Each structure stands twice: as structure tokens, then as C-alpha cells.
Image (tube, rainbow, N blue to C red; front, side):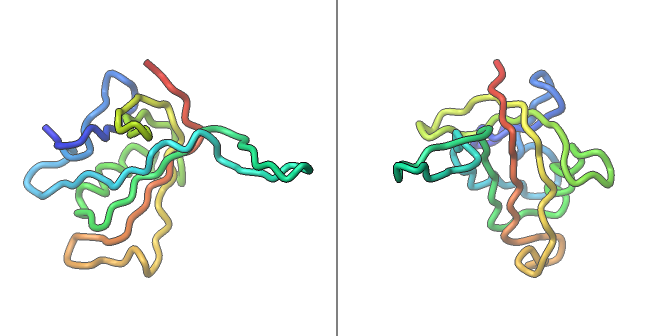
Length: 134
């Protein structure tokens, strides 16, 4: 069982801890950013800032095993850049809640280059359009 409660699945019933996705290799928990209640911040004519849009979050991995990354990305349909998943992720009060969300494939660039054989560094997986589910 994982140390943290970050989970992913195709439904609430199939949520699995990201630290338990593969066996035989070290799996890590992300540095999960707390759920941001809005996706866009705007400045009104009166100078006040207000939020708009769906909640978002992201999972940041300082370093992740290739097999664990593949297991997370397997929740996307082959070849797709994004897809609907269910996640359990952290809130600002350090509790975890379940969400239906759109997961986005990380952009592969030099910042996400292999750090070692089968390990990648600085991987960020974004989740948008979060909808709280029970």
C-alpha cells in the first residue's frame, strides 16, 4: 500500500494508488499540487481578481520510473493526448477527494529527458475539468 493517497483509475471502483501501479520497480508518489478551484484568473474593470473555469491540479514527479510512467499513461487511449480518468488527489487542507478529470499527456522535451536508464526527471501530468465525485 502506498504512503500517500494519490490514485488513478477508469472509475471510482477501480482507483489504484499510483505507488502500487507496477511491481518489481520502485514507484513514487507525485508532489501533488493542491486542487486549484479555478483554471483562469482574470482582473475585472474594478481591479479585483476573480476566478473562472473548472478546477485543475497537477502531479509533479521529480523522477519517475519508466514503467510507472507507462502505467499512468496507459489510462489514456493509445495515441490520445488527453482522456477522462478518475483520480484521488490532495486538497489544500491535506485531505484527499475523488474527482472525474481530463488527464493530459506530459509534453516530452529536454526537461523531461531520461535521467538514468528507464527513469525520467521533471515529469508533470496535468488534470483539468475536475468534477468532485463521491
